[in-house]
Length: 87
Image 1 (cartoon, rainbow, N blue to C red):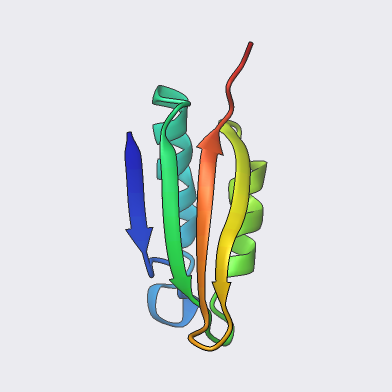
Image 2: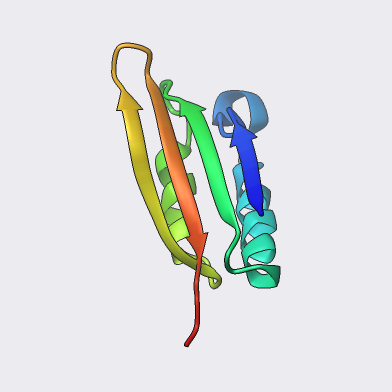
């Protein structure tokens, strides 16, 4: 499974709703640890993205969060989040 989310983290507009997004993504990865979550963001002042990524990495069912692309000219970043695969 693949979960896509785009431009869902921007605190001045959405507040800290990214905290709920982290919970939903963590639950998806609990149900299916092989799921891949693709997150694209546009970087803006005080956007909350760093806190979102940090919280994702601390989530119970998240194995890793990697920034796989950064375009400084367009202020875009792309992240891949994978579930925690227990042996």
